[in-house]
Length: 125
Image (cartoon, rainbow, N blue to C red; front, side, top):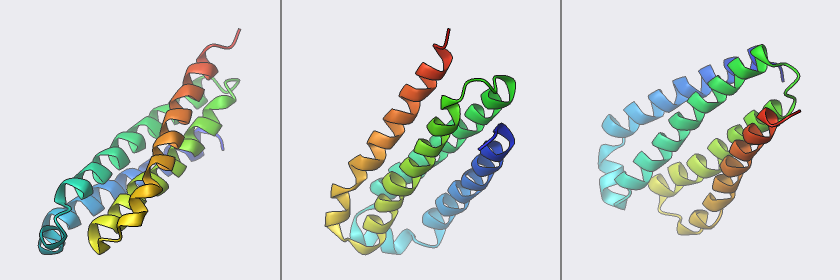
């Protein structure tokens, strides 16, 4: 993935985060209250949006510094993190399927690995 594609991915993910957050606050309010998972859903939206912004910034960096090849992998890991971390929390919040909480940390690990790769991309000699 090149910088432009990373930015486009971030734009789509950011739009989805806003849409999901708004839908959760309005259309899913009763379901989330029934399952007692409003805070869990909110956490999913926050991490989804924060990492969409991070992916956007990685895309900008990739345009400015195309020789920092690890940025592409960092962006991919953050996308994976959004799908696993936030995705599992979204489903858990709506369905109450608690075993999904067991896979949520895998998304967190993907986020951490993405951030670590950003560090290493900038450490190149």
